[in-house]
Length: 265
Image 1 (cartoon, rainbow, N blue to C red):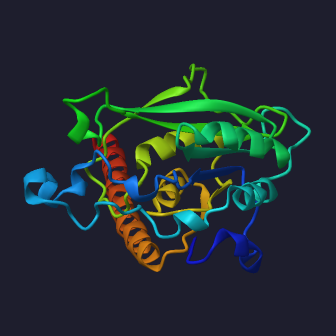
Image 2 (image 1 turned 180 degrees about the vertical axis):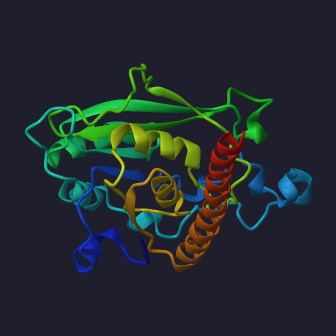
């Protein structure tokens, strides 16, 4: 369920509390959001002059983002910590490197007293304009924030590192400047939730969190305040859901055919 509204208005929609909240918050890059990115120039070439994206921010709503209100929402909408171990909820927030330290401190004020830092490593970088000048960034950062007990952890007996590789996603249409990889989101959702549990994204953007949650059999809710992103996200969710349904139906048909073949032969 994707809602075209600010997450602060969540009470109106009576959505259930979450086992996991995932959010990619504004990095507050201001008018340098596209710095070092080919999009700064027309056609990605500085010989063509600056594009309309030069000197702009990713979103006009960035300046209106209030971390304290965001953290209040998250602490309110996470499920209560159960008495049993291994079932506690948590939130995962993608953030800029220096934002981590502020978020850790503000999280404590809202009862999210503990954290695990995350690094998401890509095998590419958007900073191609600086490639022959300096070391370029290919990592994103994040935090797992939780109250007291360690969050639910479906690791299937395998060690999970806090440095996670992000596979490049060339199949899903890119509709948002900071769109997150569906495969990565599915991995995180499967680790920290069980099928049927609730996942919430308060700043849904492209809607890929909702797609990933649906793929994993979870109930997903998201808020997106910008009308154009909301419409594009709805289209992407519908498109991908139809595609997934077709794949599932093909898989089911193959399974039934194999059963028939075994019976006959």
